[in-house]
Length: 363
Ligand SMILES: C=C(O[C@@H]1C=C(C(=O)O)C=C[C@H]1O)C(=O)O
Image 1 (cartoon, rainbow, N blue to C red):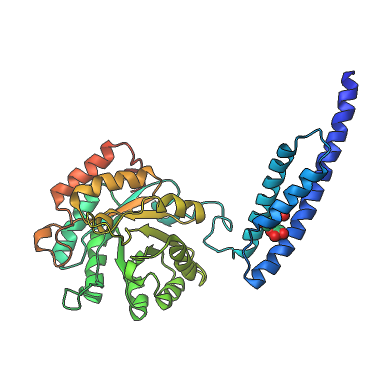
Image 2: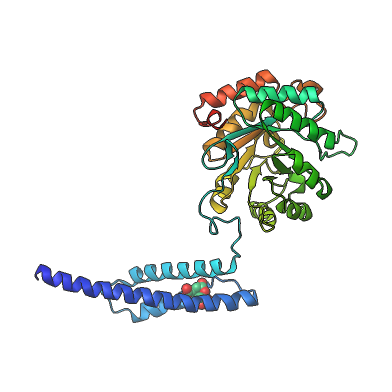
C-alpha cells in the first residue's frame, strides 16, 4: 500500500470522525431532552438499568473488529458525558461562577490590590476600643508594609452582655487611625441601617460569619459601591457560601472577597475547624479572591503561622489576623489576639517562608 493510499484512508477516517461527532451531538440533544423530563418529574438522572440495557444491545450486535468490552468502555464514556450535560443544564449559572467569568476578579484600592495572584495580610484589633489602641495597631501594621487595617466597630457577640463595640464612634476612630498610617479600613457591619453610613468610613465592608445568610444585608451590600468581604457562616456549606456571594453580586456589586474562617465541627482542639480545601474549591468554582482568617478559624496563637502558611500555599489571596497593643486588656477575644512581638514573629516567619511574595510590593 502506498503512502498516497494512506492519505486517502485518512480522509475517510476524518469523514467518519466528523460523522461520529455529529451523531454523538445528535445523541446529546436527545439525552438533554430526557434530562429535562426527568428533572421536571424529580427522577434521578442516572439510570443504571437503562445503561445496562444499552450495553447489552451493543454486545448482542457487535460484529467486530472491536472487542465488546472495548466498545462498551467507549459507550460508558458517552453515557457519562451525557449525564454531565444533563447536570450542566440544570444548574443555574451564577454570576460569581468561573463559568460566567473565567478570569480572576481583582479588587484594586489605588496602589494595593486584593486578588490576582498577590497576597495581602489584613491585620488589626478584634474591636476598636479607643483611638490610642487603634492608632498603635495601625502603626504596627504599617511597619511591615501592609495595606489593610481591620477593627470591629459593631461587634456581634455571642452574649448580649459582652462588649458590643463603639458603633459609629468606632468607625470614625478606625478611619482616622487608618488615614494617619496610610492604610485601608476594613470593618464589619451587622445591620442594614448602618450600611450607608459605615460605607462612608470604610474601604471594605465586612459581612461576618453570623450574618452570612442575612439576605437583606447581603442585598443591601450588593447595592453599595464598596468592596464587600464576606465571611463563611459558622455552619455553612461551600455551596451556601457561594449563594450568599451571589446575593451580593446579583444587586450589581461584583467587588466581593470571600473569607474562610473555620466551620463548626465536633473538634474542640481549635475554636473552629479551618476548612483549608475550601480555598481551592472556592477559587475553582468562583472568580472571587479568597482570604483565610487564621485568628477565628484556629482561636490559637500557636497555630497562626502554620495556618497562614497553609492558606498561602494552597492558593489564598491573603490572610486575616488579629493584633492588639495589649491583648490581655482587650475587650473581646483577648486570648487569641497577637501582641506586637508575636505579630513581629508572625510576619517574619511568613516572610522567611518565601510563600509571601508581594506584601511590600503593593504599598
Ligand atoms: C439519557 C438518559 O439518562 C442518563 C444517560 C444515559 C445516556 O447517555 O444514554 C443513559 C441513562 C442515564 O444514566 C436516560 O435515562 O435515558
